[in-house]
Every structure is written in structure tokens, then in C-alpha cells.
Length: 321
Image (cartoon, rainbow, N blue to C red; front, top):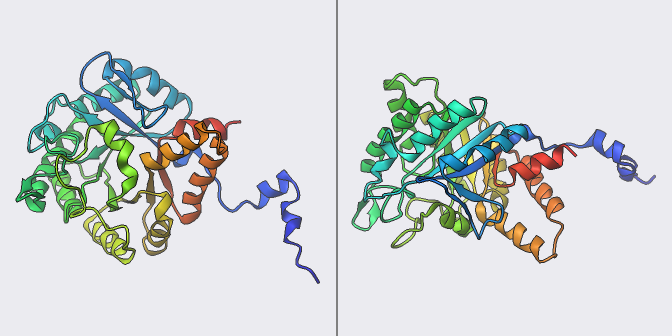
């Protein structure tokens, strides 16, 4: 007897009925770059379709996000001034805090998440306080606490620390709780690799390090077991959601977290992954829509509950066809 598995592939309707994993607009978070200033709507050349916005040009983009029923946005702030500490991150009148208040007032239905880091705000481009040509972990934690409290006071719905500092989740959870924000969740960039796939993001966020790189605090791409250790620490310290970044080259890590933790797992479909698909499609080498959907579906299949992606609007449009 021949096992005829093709019987369940013979028509579109039967394929729909037996499909194991499905993408939904409910899975998506859309990243946004907010720049301090006015009349800014600057295309990011290395990320076709993505722009930097000032608050006075942002509403049209947010209107489209809401119309497409995308539930959440992840904000990255680009300040007009930087210093060695990144002190604009805890300025209650800083660009991130202004953006949170603006979006909450004008688009109150959107779920609002802020990236919590320093690289866009420091003059040296690293993710914390520099001591002897490296990021000093514990002094950076002090400033992280100030940053998240300022975001919380502005009205954010969730904070997402991305700096890979040891002890950052415990520090943030304690600071939020001490200031009365016990119900504010944390989505941790729990397993973040020192990846070459971040290149276009650094164009977008003005965050290229002036010296060195981030390999002393972000993870070595060779390591898998270390990802479980990192996620375990964040889980124990009180993270509500665990994230893997990047996504497409780290599907095994997404799968590891899904199997080992009883928390939602997020992944970040990063700028380089986005740019490669856009560039190949522009050359006519691939079917952009099919490759986009297949890539994101692989993340769902690996175990991601949430996907942060620059494709969010395009995916949402595809899903309503």
C-alpha cells in the first residue's frame, strides 16, 4: 500500500483545513522611528518603504496602522542631542516621552511599546556608560531604571529593554514596582545576538558605534545553549515576554525558548532580513510577497507567538486579500 499524503494537498480548501500554522495580524508589532524636530519624513535608503518621522508628520502612518488592525507599535527615538550617558533617555520631555504622550492622545487604541536602550542617545553609539573602552554593566543599570520610570510616567503600555545588560530585568522590574507601575509588563530582548543583520537599522536609528562593536554584551552567533541561560535569567527576574533577535537565522533559538519556557515568545524580524528580501525583489529574483509570508511563517512554525517586523503593514494587507 502506498501512503498517499498528497490527498490532503489536492485543493486549496483542503490545504486550508489541514494547515498547522497560520499568520495573523494579531501576531504583529510594527517598529517606528521617531525623530526629534519638525517636518521630518525621511526615507531610509537601506530599508525601502520605511521612514523616520517627526511627531507632526506621524499621524498618517499611525492612521494606516490602525486601519490595518495592527495591534501594537514599537518605538525607537532619535534625539536632537546626544551625550556620553544618553541622558535624553530619562528626560521627561525627551522625544520618546513626547511620542508616547502624542500617540496615546491621538491613537489611544494602539498598544504602545518603547525600546529601552541607549545606543541612539549616546555620543559614542554604545548601549550604556563607557569605562575603559567597554560598557560598564552596573552603572548602566542605574540609568536603565531612570529611563523606564520616565517612559512609564509618560504612559507607555510595555517596555522592551534591548541592551543585554546582566541583571537588567530585575533592575527594571524593581524600579517600576517601586514607582507604582506594578502592572507594566516587560518584553525582554532576552537572546540578542551580535549580528551582522542589524546594518540597515543603524542607518535608521543613527546608532553605529564610534569605536569597536557590541560583542562584549551581545551574544556570539555560534552559541545556542547560552541563549537558554540568558532567557532563564530573564525569566527568573520577571520578564513577561522573552524575545529572540534576529529571527530568521535563529529559528532554532526561538524553538528552544518555546519548548523550555511557559511565557510568550517574541522574535524580531530585523532590518537586514527585511532589506535582503526588498533588494532581491527589486532585482526581480524572487516573489517578494511569497518570500515575505514564507519567512514570517517559518518564525511562527518555530514557535514565535509575536513577530516584530517592518513588513507588518504589507503582511496585514496580504492577510485581508
